Length: 571
Image (tube, rainbow, N blue to C red; front, side, top):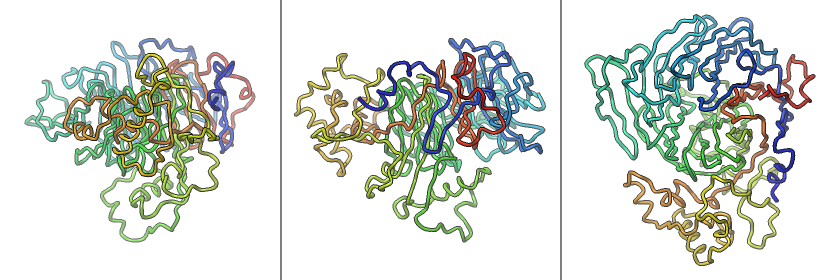
């Protein structure tokens, strides 16, 4: 039995954790730093939109400039966030709004324009509108798509365009995305569009009108809802994940498709970039986290730890480390960066974005560890490490491989000391209702399927004698090399044709990561994961926002309640 399967047995399953340890030390839940509705009553979340959290730092003189916004049901709250320093005072929200007839679904602060006197907060709604508000001045500035003439479907994601004080992007469950300018009106009629660019399963239209009006652009991406998008750290690229199971990465300004990836199964729900822009992680209905390499446009690893849909993925900028093998040249005119907008990120990240400018083949860092996390509908938090043995499989493995757990295919004689494959989760596809099909695959079918996979990928580094029977239940799916050509010309993509291609490699063809930790931390499904400098913030559908102090960062709060298991009101 694998380590994780053993861990999950017995009483452990239902016990909510209030602390967990990694190689850095112990992370502790600060019960006094919990944010929620002022009455602290668990929210009955049936049929409600996910609880979301946004942060902004207003750089006020007191040194306590962190502000938090969160939505619970029809309500939206804006508080001073005291984090690990002081207990949360829920009796004094700076702003509170209750909406009728529609619910907030997502929100985003403009970090460029935020001051102690004024912040610009965009809020998306279940009926399709987007509101621009200032929760400090308490002014409702503007309402976009007010008459729902642009899109009638739910807003799934709203974000300011990096480096811009006025442009923002809005995604809807219709599968469309719209670019707005806060200075422009939306017009009183349904917009007329003119095709600007069309590509594989996407099109971009401009708004045709005498005077400039919103939306400036309309993107139609994939099939089904567009669940989330994320801008690259340099603001030049946009990663989108959709209900059709595709990750699509666009050059935002050139409006061109850079690359795509297909989930193993079902829709993709969440996406994020590594701090240097080299890797993208996506999660969704296949219960997996998938790591995709931006430069090579291919899947380099999958992580299996969740037992249900993955709702949020995020990189931990503060635990991710890159050590260069040779000194970086920071001299010169830095022409590459003249046209780039810097967003005031911390110095380590700008170093990493410069790293991403280098070709990964001519100077590989000596030691790379990317830390990312995921939370899911299974109420579990997973933390993952992505290390050089996964990123650069052709290099000799470093001997100090202490903190990466990787489940590769076991050797054929069964003597491998690696853990056995995890039990298959319910939402991973079976070719037949019974699981006997995996064992009853005949050797010829298995051999053909493996050969087809190898021929598609030019996977010379794979050893044919390595066998991973858990996925041969899908061995009957044909993987002819002609499928790769058909894939590009067909509009509707048949999942059977993507499996075994670079879009969606078979499970046995990429390393399978095991989480560093996988802990149940809530009663209800988790909807938020944010990494801050001194803590991790999580939230669940009951409306409780939890602060986990990083090792050594417990701060001024008394730790008297830390050892006890949290009471009913916590997460």
